[in-house]
Image (cartoon, rainbow, N blue to C red; front, top):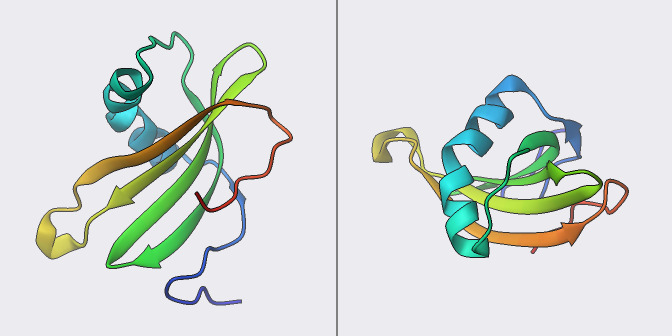
Length: 100
């Protein structure tokens, strides 16, 4: 099923491209949460087509703790820049990724 502009797609297993996005925004996550993460591994994600792309990413941040990231990637003409829009900590592996 094709994704509708503005709607979120289905949750998928994280890819190397998603891990790269996480690696790039990790300093922003650490700044926003005032924490340092030794572990920062993307596990799953969903996308939302906007004027660019929103990524909703579940990241393992240590042990059984996970965080949900909302990352915006601009369109090609704007340089495909990444911006951390929001982060939710204290999540679990089983908690679904939802719009936030």
